[in-house]
Amino acid sequence: MTDPLVREPNEALRLATTEEHLKTLLPAEKPNAPASKEYNRLKIWLTMTPQIPLMLRTAALHAAGFTKQSKYLDLKTEVLINVLRAYINPAQPMSISHTQKFLNNFPAIKGKVWISTYACWDPSYRLKADWPPNTQGIQEAILKTINGLRHPGTPPPAITMPEVLPVEAEWTGYRKDATAESRLPEGLSQKELYGEMMKEVTSRTTILYMHGGAYWLMDPATHRAASRLLAKLTGGRVYSVRYRLAPQNPFPSQLVDALVSYLGLLYPPEGAFHTAVRAEDIVFAGDSAGGNLALSLIQVILYLQRNQINKVMWQGRMVEIPLPAGVAVSSPWMDVTHSSESCKRNAEYDYLPEPSTMRAAEKKRPACKVWPASPPRQHVYCSNEMIPHPLVSVILAPSWKGAPPMYICTGWELLADEDKFAAQKMWREGVDVILEEYEGMPHCFSVLFPLIKEARRCNQGWAGFIKNAVESPERLRGKSRFVTVKAGSIEEVEIKEEDVSKETQEEIKVRIFDRVRSGAVAAEGEVAKL
Image (cartoon, rainbow, N blue to C red; front, top):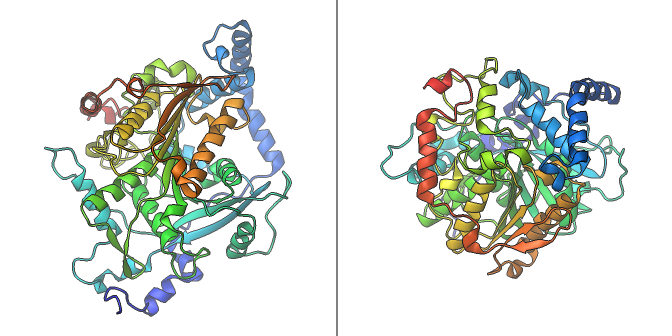
């Protein structure tokens, strides 16, 4: 019997799936062309020169053993962390838009990597007037989740739902026989590049990857090294999402794009490079803000399933939204207010500046066309009322019961306490969880410093979990574990579940709400007076 909700695509729907039409729907502004090698060398030299005194001072203190980091890090890594901290928290920061533009010079695609860019699009969104009554689309599903997960006693938030737009992503695979200087073959279309990539994929593992960057920086292009490594270690492929960035596109634009990307894997649009991917072959992954986005998407799916409304209109028919095989996140940002004690306690080990230092510097950030926002708000990512919402500060998620297996790695970083609390909560609610805490390591160390011993161990654990979630899920079932990985020796020390975190959800909730009310999360001086 024919499904009454499945319609033959009409001419408008067919046209909307063609590559030519997609080009008209995608944003006109594209990443800057890769700069020449000579220009990049000059730029690095000019950028590094002012940091020479800091580098020399760090080297001297490290050699004398006068820094806490020297007990856990080699000299090169400690110097790089301190230089990174200086860049992230300069005496006079650039404007938001200038910073975004500065970091938009993407590297050339070369080396042992396949990249194929694809834009996923749901043309049925443009045909909403033709939908059957009471049909739920992506916007409606996310809005219901936002309202359903709001804290008891709080009014429904005033949310302007973003439009459902084409979402680009980079298919990423490992290119075994290439050299460090190899470029992608000339003359091949993006679909043909995808075909070449697939010739080297040896596993059915598909990683839906969300990059980090505090929701307003970075891109799949800046995370190609991490995506390539995960593809290499798993034998699979990575679908790295180019979601919309804040502050131009505040929450929930990123969540809409993530859901579009997931549905695009499960139910490919006409003309897609890939065939349908089973949910049990997909693992959500991400770092920092990307980890937040991956976990937020899981919360959406869990809410829709619990309330038996987990069907949406996609490509002209109603489809289910299943859970993936697992979630694997590195240093996930789960409390956007930075309220935990580790944000102060671990400041010496991290390149992320301690919150009060960051706020002091942000007061000096010059205004630009995108920030402060109009109307003004405290946070770059979202409106004030959404800061403590469980889809933004996912540490306040009411329940993880029913979630797929989870992998969380963290260092001795600002976000350590929130990551450990979330892992413990998941375990107590019956989720299979692996938590790896790395002694002395900074935020997202395995992504930034992949060659150090601790990062190699972390990436093996990260990729190993992803591969097991797809190919050997029985290895994760009932096998939760919490470990501290010692620096240098890579020895694993078990942590008792009850010792992972001593905080309660109510304590964290009170702390986060207090910070929002006090304006302590404001990212710009004048906005802090709200």
